[in-house]
Amino acid sequence: MKERMEAVSLEVDGQKLRGMIHFPSGEGPFPAVALFHGFTGQRMEPHFIFVKLARLLAKNKIIAVRFDFRGSGESEGEFQDMTIPGEVEDGIRIVDFLKEHLLVDKDRLGIVGLSLGGCIARLVATKQDNIKCLVFWSAVASPEELIKQKLTEEYQVTKEGYIDFGGNKVGKDFLATLPRVEGPESLSAYRGKALIIHGTKDDTVPLEHAYQLKKILPFSQLKKIEGADHTYNRVDWEEEVLRKTVNFLKDNL
Amino acid sequence: MKERMEAVSLEVDGQKLRGMIHFPSGEGPFPAVALFHGFTGQRMEPHFIFVKLARLLAKNKIIAVRFDFRGSGESEGEFQDMTIPGEVEDGIRIVDFLKEHLLVDKDRLGIVGLSLGGCIARLVATKQDNIKCLVFWSAVASPEELIKQKLTEEYQVTKEGYIDFGGNKVGKDFLATLPRVEGPESLSAYRGKALIIHGTKDDTVPLEHAYQLKKILPFSQLKKIEGADHTYNRVDWEEEVLRKTVNFLKDNL
Image (cartoon, each protein chain N blue to C red):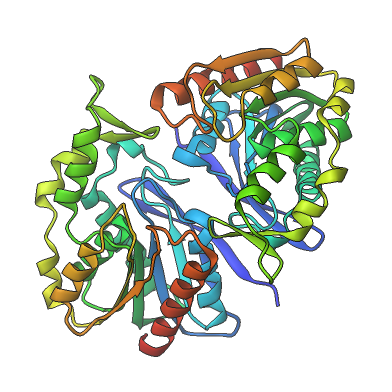
């Protein structure tokens, strides 16, 4: 059977988000999941783990969409203008797109977020009342402290007003808007299901962030991947993350 | 002015290559450049440098296409089946697509290849007689020795027949086909122009590979980026690489 993967675009504030939608075979309606990438990442993510997840979901009768946030990947906008509130706007637009899609069962929606994409997922879930499943991969629970520590201790703001983060221009607004990002406690009103996956050797976002999320969502499942790094860069770690995620969504969405 | 970037797909051996084409404004025909990504990479590459290059080329009246090779990114196929001869087939298909495109001036074609994509670029250029410009970014000149050294010294082939390379399954065929990859000397018949760019601190593909290419193409330009790593992960390195590449292609294509 040939896969059904189609390029799709949406507009937010006059700028185009570019992404892909993966359809299962059959007529639907299907449950649907949006995948939110991380900081400086894009909709494929390392070792194409987002493409692999979307393909697996489609095989399991779940629609998957993967978009680049504005300023990242192939979407319009400059990375230098990227902010967390901006990515939340993008995320809401993506969820709205799923709700309006004829093949989607709008009562069965989920979000998988990797790293900062996990933070965006929780912020979107507090603003959209019908997210039924959240899956956090190596998610940032509290961004402000972590980001300030990573960006301001080792990097300097240039006279042009950005931090040179490995060739990515991190703009002033990204840092300036951090204090107004809601903390993880806002998620306590969330009434859906949640799965929290985190590597025990994550150097980028410490395991502590997973415990923070678990504390706010006591009914959630926490799955630690023994020895795994931030993006599960080993075949067995990847397989475990994909298997747990697909099974959780099949059972709960 | 809105950019004109469109999703495009091609077939090779019944499998779909997925990519993007960037059009300049105006009616054409335009010269055109194909961007070939590296090993385990995809058509955006780190800090989206391939997206940035394609946008700049389109602004400069040059069509740009970026595809994922089979088994990589969003293209069909398994990474475990990826081989250099397979990527060369893909590359030839991509160049043929440009030659057949109504908006492309087929006498003004170029290829930019990053890392292993540079090796694919030279192999395609020896099989297609009308490539007018080649640009090598941190290119692998002689793959066999380098890859064997990187893959077989630090990694083991699993009983399932692959090497776990950071979550990417490198297949037996990738290694088995290395001895039949033509060496860089085959490029001595190339009659087009060439620009070789390489970072002086490239730990992944040593600068020596740039010198090998320069020796075979004595008429080419060699531009060293002082202190730069393999994928130019600093804003000033990236800007220099993009500027040199666009200027070279504007002047020579």
